[in-house]
Image (cartoon, one colour):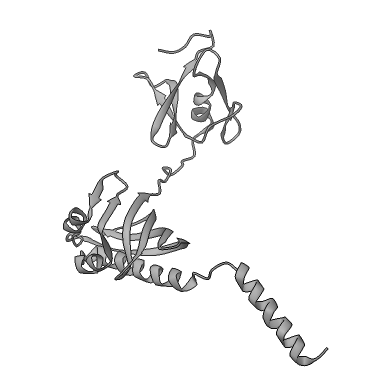
Length: 232
């Protein structure tokens, strides 16, 4: 087998492999990440010109409070932080999905804020839609949401902890049983949903119910007393 034949075979194999290879979007990903960080840097200073340069004429933004702002309204609302506040926004995880002239970026934002002498750290998630236009990539839509945090936990004395135990009733057919162990509460029920549990006390200080807080909505469970009656 001649060296020329081997070279031709290798070239054809490489060409065939390239036809089935995934497109390399690393350059675009790097570009959009850089531009996105520039936009975040401009937020604290209220630099509208930076955003104006990269926004599509039909830009829409949904904030974490569900407000939807068009391009003009968003730019008008963009202002520097007031006196007493100093902060920065930094990109964390950053991913890009590309389909022709459309690119979707999914990323996290770490906010560091000095709020009148108190240090606050918050995280946000953002989904941005970019379109490739005649003047380059422009930000077409954006959805930003804050990452919710659970309140800090505390340790309770065993006597207080056990005050939460009992049977809690959702419907005639659905109930859960909470019992206290040495250092924690244990809840038993099949198919538990994702939730935070908040206990409620009556005017006399006795535990009468808890709520499952699911994405900000509360599902009420009333405590059943030893006689089997439901506390009202």
